[in-house]
Image (cartoon, rainbow, N blue to C red):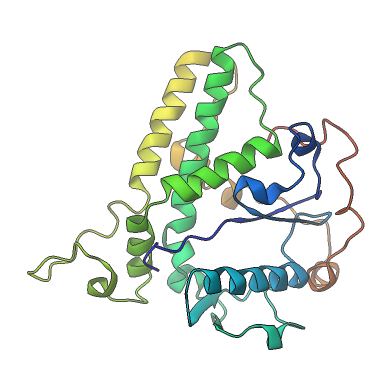
Amino acid sequence: MTGTCKLPPFVIYKYLKPRPFTRRSVSVPENLGISWSANSKAWMTIKLFEQFLLDFEKRVKEAGRKEVLLLVDNFTGHKIVSIQDHIKIIRIEFLPPNVTAVYQPMDAGIIRAFKSHYRKRLIHLKLERLQIGQAAEVDVYDAVVMLEKAWRVDMTAKTVKRCWIHSKLVDAEDILPDFNSAGELPDLNVGIYSDGVRELCAAIFQLEEATADSGIVPNMTATEYIEFENVHEIEDPLSIEELAEFQALGDTEATEEADPDPDEDGDLE
């Protein structure tokens, strides 16, 4: 919660060995600074959640932590089935239903700030490629490189701290060094994600100027662009029962193979 121990993002994709990686001779995605796994839906499952927890336990031990509290929302794929005996220093607390938007620090600005920084980098990459006459499409390799930098470089410890305070789970004076001697709390909304939004606005404007009516610029504000997934939810073709079964069991059918079609990835936004 102090932003001093930011672990690599856990990326879930449809294929363990996507062609954009193999074309660049990347056989170990973890060398890009991420944790990587896959299933046919690119969804979190109980199996992958347990994989994440084991990796989390290892990493916090290596970081010198003796005891860690991990807050987790009550998503159906977030369950522990078979690894209880392997979790030694992590205490896992699942948030009650319907409070994620209120108490989850990730939803108090961290996700939004991360998305703004990622999409700023996305716009800049498109602009750079267009300026040298290249296609502006982005593949999964590009996406991984950008998201790793957005998390490691752009997301500051200050942003993480302020989001924790914004969630009301901790007191400002416990983690904010700039809590002044008069006891006045700085504006928590400043610096949570406003810098990222301003930078994204500037990036969109640059791309708009450079491409005119090409249709490449998103026809929406920066804020709408950040929240795109929340506004345009893709309907799930599975029934509730099928979804629950997939999250519980996952699948391995598609994970061991590279994507069969070089154009399968499409343009990642």
